[in-house]
Length: 219
Image 1 (cartoon, rainbow, N blue to C red):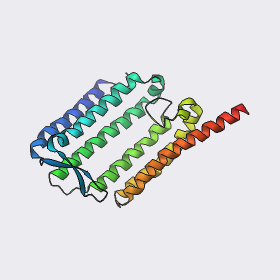
Image 2 (cartoon, rainbow, N blue to C red):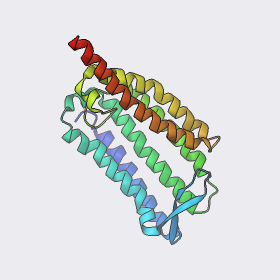
Image 3 (cartoon, one colour):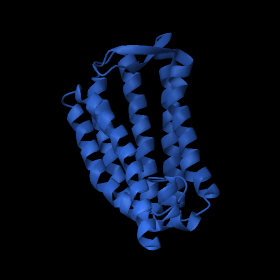
Image 4 (cartoon, rainbow, N blue to C red):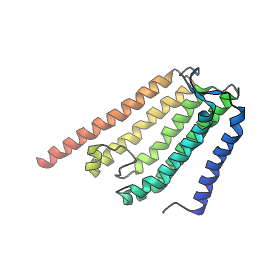
């Protein structure tokens, strides 16, 4: 498949192996119950038994790697469209995997006693991840797994393109809120609200565009 070179397989294998080796190293060093979730002030509010806490990071990352790189391309009905922006898709998939690896590393560090400001790291990491969405949204073509997939964007390539152009411009504001939350963690609530509003607004916008297009064609 396009993009699946020996270098790609080697990089993916090394990355996933490194996560599992870190898990093997970390297991005997973790407390019996690991902190796995924090509130917006960076205070622990959820715990998990050591075994599951250690396995969660590499397990989820391995699962997503298989899903994003192998399952989705194999079952995508509009595979030609996915291949049209494949390089951008791969870059974002890698960004997701690196994000998960970073969050796993931060979780282990906190449980080892290092004074990590979780709320600041999460804001920074999410801000960078949302910025990685910009080129993907600009290049995405109609498909069933990636992008703003509503009944109306999937029914009309014209609506798809317009909605994704708007999504690429407006997601920068969402990313900026997350990055600001790295300095002022209280803004994490605003960033989360903006994310939901962004997604819901694009869904409504896609419907309105589709209806307007249909009425113009019928008139």
